[in-house]
Amino acid sequence: MNQQLILDLEHLLTREHVLSRPEDLLLYEYDGSVEVARPNCIVFPRDAADVVRIVEIANRHDVPIVGRGAGTGLSGGALARHGGIIVSFARMNRILEIDIENQRAVVQPGVVNSDLSAAVAHAGLHFAPDPSSQKACTIGGNVSENAGGPHTLAYGVTTNHVLGMQLVLCDGQLIRIGGKSLDAPGYDLCGLFVGSEGTLALVTEITVRLTRLPETIKTLLAIYDRIDGATETVVEITARGITPAACEMLDGWTLRAVEAWVHAGFPLDSAAVLLIEVDGMREAAEEHAAQITEVCKLHGAREVRLARDAKERDLLWKGRKNAFGAVGRLSPTYYVQDGVIPRTKLPQTLREIDRIGKENGFEIGNIFHAGDGNLHPIILFDARDAQQFQRAVSTADAIIRFCIEMGGAITGEHGVGMEKDRLMPLLFTDADLALMRTVRDAFNPVGRFNPGKIFPTGKGCGEVRINPLPLSGSAGAPPSGPTPS
Image (cartoon, rainbow, N blue to C red; front, side):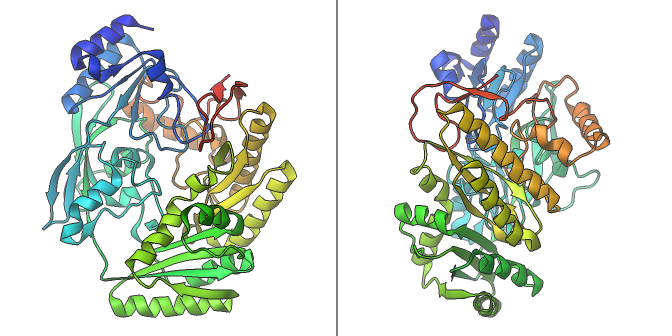
């Protein structure tokens, strides 16, 4: 422990804004992934000026810096892989400006995603990106990972709603990029920084676009006795030129786990359900709902239910967005993957996931953004068993490899982080990766910001050891589970 580093940070921020005791550091070893990495300390800046000074202190002591939001990420992106300072933005959580007339808001990075929508709901507006963790995750974290969510099928991911940012660069320089206009002149730097996983700068302020709430929302639950019928429905909806606001799928095993906890009304005897939502002008939404119902029945849906009111709609979405928590009741640990495939490849990919799971002795549940082809297979395992953990990682890798074979990618919304960096060469050539490193080095030449992320290092969740300690049931990594080897 560098005591002078701690003293310098405490002098800047006061002791209550700096954590360095071992019992405090334990809480920041984890996020929602199966990765583990311990920082040297955690600091809580109050404003951009504090962040500038923190960067200056880190440069003086030659230590890494990792930005962190709520810690809900699923790829180890907010973990201090090489130690150093974690900059938690939890206390920079103010909505600085709401411009109703121009549908804009300016927020600090620690603002919780759903809190912004709640703050503008009275004006008929919302912040469209809606990750399943939106009641906890922060907009700064959404920016770092370019987070998605169920409704990004129609509304787009985070980058489509970020117009400007205030950033602290690795030399301590405070800059602004973009603005409140839709198309700022010059290079699209916002597009570059959103999704850069904290490797280019620390974000201290974000200007976002607000979206008007639709006049009408129609939420349908299509129930199937065959998984293939559900996946074939998704393909045909797209082929007919219909773009729902959301199109989510739960397989039979997952929906039964959800129903046992949430009681959302999912039928326990079905093989799969599709949760489909259309919105917009009343006439158009009703027409699209009718067309989708026709497609669902054409592909074997035994029933298509229309949510009768907002209460029933909210209950269905509660089931979808609390699914991971429901699965956590059934297994000591689980590993949530994040692969992308073309929608037309859904039927064979789900069959292959089932085959891979059975071959490796794992139960794998599937709940995912079917309309985007963004898969989230959930591998249930016990991290107290080192060999089982290694098999879980190998199983996850096999699924991602198949996604690539189908013309897909290694991540859709969770990010690369330290979970999938070793898989990047499966998707990119050496020249591709060299170009990306050149971009990173232009902003982060000494690798101060979030080192060991995105680019292959030869380490990751596939190279971990398990401490044989008791642990309580939880999602992702357990309190005494995997540690880097």
